Structures are given as structure tokens and as C-alpha cells.
Image (cartoon, rainbow, N blue to C red; front, side, top):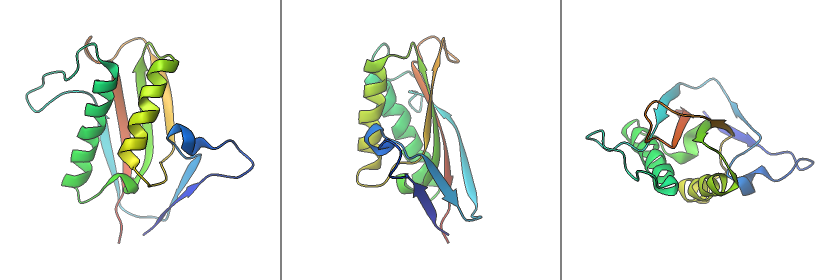
Length: 135
């Protein structure tokens, strides 16, 4: 079962910012990931006070869940990114990390939400994902 990323040519190039405008799923089995933060396996925050390091760890955790499920970044059909005290510098760090995460793949749709805080005070970013299984 395929996922088709939608990026109309008459809209801005969202892929330059690490996301697609939409994605079409064709009825496949779907994996819903809990929001991932910069926790290691022992619940230690990776990169306390270091926003780019926390983004990288959250995406690494997503990659680990995907791999455990037999999936990869190309199977992601939706992201939602929560950023504490969002600004252009932090948004830029997310865009750069997503480019590394996806590599040459077309990125999935992503909504970025600026928030006042997350579950614990040291968390600076949380990323939710939805992925689709292939046939």
C-alpha cells in the first residue's frame, strides 16, 4: 500500500521547510507513535538546555520505534512538532533535523505548534508521528 505526498506547484515549496502539504493513505495499517522527547532508555534528558540536541534525540527515538516496527522515515505520513518558546532559530533547528531524518525522501506533512511547556521542565521539543505499513 502506497503513500503519496501532495505538494501542489501553485503553493510554496514546503519540502524546503521539512514537510509536505498533504499525504494520501490508501487504507493501510497505520502506526500511531506517542510524542517523542529527548529521553534516553534510562529516562535521562539528552541535551538539557540544548534545543538542537533534543530535536535530534526525539527524531532518533521516532526512528527507533519505526525500525522496531519494520518501518522507516519514508513511511511517516504525519508529524506534529511541539516547541517550547518557539522562534525562528528553533524552527530552523527542526527544519535541519528533519532534512537529515528524511534524507532524500519527500517529507511528510508536519504541523509546528509553539507551546509554553511540555510534560517536564527540561523538555524543549516533542514530536508525534503517524506512519503507514506497506503491503
